[in-house]
Image (cartoon, rainbow, N blue to C red; front, side, top):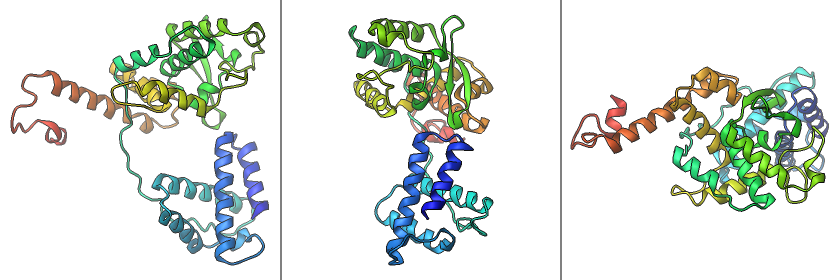
Length: 313
């Protein structure tokens, strides 16, 4: 299977402009399937890609399920296999896609956690001090909340991507698609203070140089940003959140303040409006919660419009 995997990875890199993280995950998933087949078939050499059957893929996924793999992980692995076998059929290496009749596991769809506006404001203030790292963390938090950027997008910002005069920044999303989004004055101020704190050599980089640096002077990683967000947000009443919670909060707060769904879709870089529409549910949930807290008759005993009963009416 090695040659088929290499061809698929090349397709991801050249034709689909997939991120390095996606390529790494897909390569790992495919090699995991190859090891499973070699083990179950008791073969000494790697299995041929054109001999893989639907039943074997079912058995592979079932074995992962038995080992306690999450449904979301199983769904991702199956999506990887579907994509790979679809490519191999188009490439003429296979006559039939063995994943065609396989169903993805059902995934729960909980609404993402959203910070209140007060919590979001508090989170921005948690990095204190004037050290380059503290100023960097503040600038990162402000930028994520101000732009709704995915964590991979914010670490990918280069010096040349920021236009302070117009208050816009270029983000590179999934499939390396670029989009221009507004960035607020507070985020711009935080970035300026952070960049001023750096040594002259680090401060005056090329346009393609990273905006946000790690302690060694290289581009900060997504994992480092996730750890940073978790560390500061653990001080909030609701506990730690992921960087994606800032993206959800950004969209929900825009909607609360009257921004239209199409504009939010453009700024988030969603290909489909249906993806953006989940924020209408988030905004409504917050509205109902505020009503329950504030209205003197919201919690009347046995009220047919209280709690879940009201939502389903």
